[in-house]
Image 1 (tube, rainbow, N blue to C red):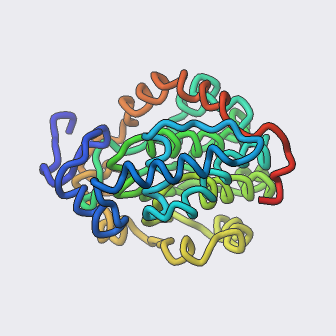
Image 2: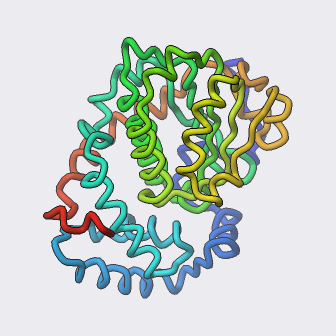
Length: 294
């Protein structure tokens, strides 16, 4: 199993150059034109520089994430940047100790990580084993904070910016002991951040091994979700249903796949190696709380 490799059509997660087929996706789905990128960056940079009380990152790679997430609509990208910088102000508990090194207990529990290979459409795949969470060792906000951190790490990759992210939420063994530790305020912060504040293309969300107890939680969460996100959620009664969307070639054995169930240590290592980038994040942002109405 350790020597198994999927077919070449399944690109590795750590691919950091944009191949021709992915560039074609950018052109068709995001309206990205290589020759027009500098002009779009200049327009967006000017909008961001004029925003009051904001110290922004102005690097091309940062701004490009938001342009891609909003299909090169500069105004929409600017609005998303404002939301990105307002998230820590609006949801301070979700961004407390927002560095990989502060989340070692979650990392060691192997609850969230990206699979080592992308789906055939280039999507990065986040596996979240919510049912394996031990509420006695890890708080709910720690669990959700690290999920956001994993997503922030993933969108630094240009292929992920273009092709998006698919999430598999494995609810096996999710019980009342989990549900009773979940604060709806934490869930609201989590959903709003992922949905409205990060430059992510959410392609699909797959819920597997769900139970009636999880249904109680989903009833509370559903009103927080946009119609667009709700329409991209799929519930699976068995793993064979999941395989219609994500190939067995890149899934772990526990999900009926051909890869090892061992967590993707390369992803964790990369996350920890980017500690300084998460620290540097706090050099930028709003100077006051008056933008809370944005």
